[in-house]
Length: 508
Image (cartoon, rainbow, N blue to C red; front, side, top):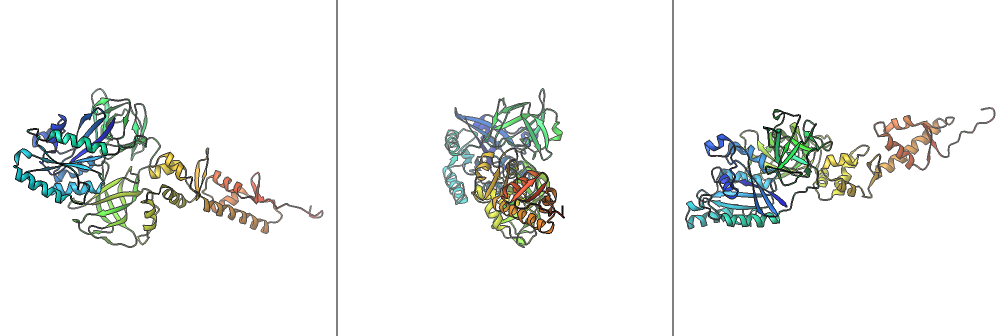
């Protein structure tokens, strides 16, 4: 069965929650305050079985500008946007901000629901349609269907379901074979179960009794039970709204923005390099400007730093940048993010993460050549760059943690002739040119030792290793010695194969 996550977007009181309820029969407003005030404050969820082979999960997000951060927590994992615009009001401020957010997050497609169509005559509907077409021109919604609907009378709901089915079938499914990642958007205690967390499963799968890791704390937990759309399941896969029962932890120890992953797989980060785009409507962004950083369900205070001595990023422009988070978070290359101005809090830009463990650099450093490679689709070149930057190479497992790529993708990338891959039990990858040059350097060091100490049989291994390779793994040093055809190892001593100690009779 194909599972697609559809997120609502649009201005406050344009009928997002009412439309979801009309489609699914589920009221996504779960909080008493939301029902009392008639607006969505936090994220709501509902689901709809459109066909026997297609199930849609709705993420209903608030439209009020004060709750945009809640909207960002919900919109990160969606595949398709249901963009809601009221026929009697058309384009409003949060319509524009939600539209900008959807573009910055790279949402691939969507449908435009022209709500409250029963309150507008044909001329008003046509005028709204023309205004919407002009508004979305040149964007991912440029050719999206515009469906007049009414949650009150049911007008257009069947048409909307057909358009949802058509659009959902064209969207690529999330990768359930990838690494398990679940950004947490809610945590609570359920009677008879204990602690439960919910989220949109963005990658991989999870089963009961599986060991998982909570980030950024690194705490290991056991999955007691799994639910998908409110029903117990033997397995939850990418693209599904998922609830996980976690024993041995209290709800107060969990919060929105944390992430569950496969155990011992990834590491949280506080520094990331990215491709950043500033909205045309934003003011110029200065070097070291404080911002609110949003990715997945996390909101973290951060600082934006530019490279190559750049002091400001003008509106509407792109640049490579480094973002330093005040708190660690589980992020991976390819994740998209939003930044909002620190004060007043408005959306000003966003982009895509390229690296989560970049080397320390000065502000004058030209990062463009490096980040051009990391932003390319050439996996082999990206992996080769990271290996070259690692002083003594890196393990395939660490490459998975650094890139988020699968073990199979890493294995394929390591077949490059520029790289040298060592097999188990010491799986390791190094730059072939570095390996060859280092082995040659060891030969020269041993030759120099013999010239200075002609009466000694050879140089102790630890002395040879300690010169330039003190921090290198022992198995890597042994591999370098084995790769040098001119060297021989006698126990803990290394010598040239041609070196023999021959003493005259009087010297003996």
